[in-house]
Image (cartoon, rainbow, N blue to C red; front, side, top):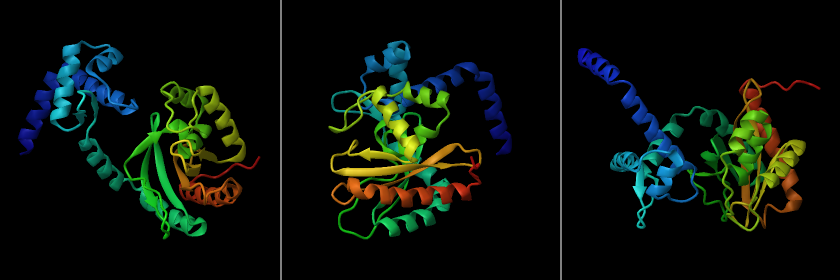
Length: 270
């Protein structure tokens, strides 16, 4: 069995550059579909990647066969459910969830609303964990799903403390789509919001993703001071009023500061 594995490795090494290039291009297709707010047609994918139409079509056929992408009834392409399955398995193996859970449970007990743990993946935020309160009206979000970084409290919280070059690179990827009447519609609006976030220490999603839902978010920092995740508190706007957001944000910031300290972050006194 060991000998056979070595032989396969040697054979693949000889096959070399073309196969590696094909894999790289396949991942480029997945990245592109993942960043698009809606399914894309073959011509759109071809134009965006600058590849020959027949080449892109072959990649899409293979990815579709493995359920990495799927076709809509209109014949356009979007990410497939196989990626959701793989993502869930990766999330289950991600040790940050276990370390953060006690802090999230304490936070939920204090504020009586839903807490989420999220990470940033390019111009998206991905939900890794969710702790709910024991009340009748709760959030409908699901672990493993994602939202755009520019209109979520967790996304804006992490963007606000990223180094400028990295933040600029992410800003360059954003395509602004209105998800609600209050969704930020331009980079200028987002930059103004990020400046407010830096000053107060937490971000606000004021019904920008979904009307009737308000969220506050703050970043978790590792031992180098880098934002590696963020926590949000979300709830219906009739409970999370503008007046009590500040109180909830105070409890949230205590939570992320405790998590960051557990990860080795030490704030330098000014």
